[in-house]
Image (cartoon, rainbow, N blue to C red):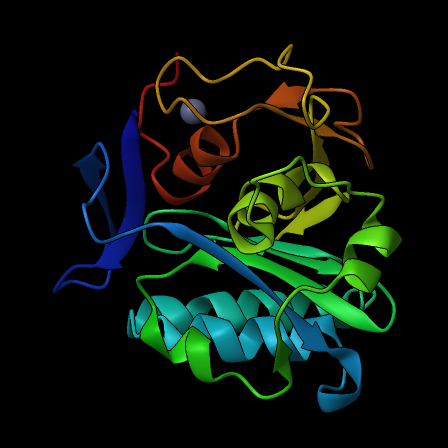
Length: 210
Ligand SMILES: [Zn+2]
């Protein structure tokens, strides 16, 4: 299933890239909804979740990055994506609720304020019909990446996964097996990128790209 990539600060304060191959047995994606009334906006929820990762300085640096983007005019209710241990976290603004797809390794996510389980009204709003036998939490954990455009906090671009739910025509990065994303705004609009390759490019200029 490809490599999982994340970054940690080394003793000299440089971001050090870490890899893990394949699945971790106790790790899976999970999803739930957050009642919008409980939070100021999507960015507030994202900053809280980033700090729950407990990745030390990397958390505070990423929250600073998000704050800077907001200062530069990013709408705090933009749907957001950021790195968590085995699966990316997607926060999709759905009006009355924020749909969250994330990794169950971060136990603090279970106790977030305003957390509600999926019901049919959420799925109706998202236009998702579950097939018989499909579990809403699992399916939405996998499918939220298709629901919205996202601002990728680490790399600072807005993009959308290049494919549709149920139509497996999407392309994946050969290195990370990650689904490719089309950049939808700015100077790079239209470019097809791997979000993990983009992250490596930002944090480790010397990493060789495919
Ligand atoms: Zn990649």
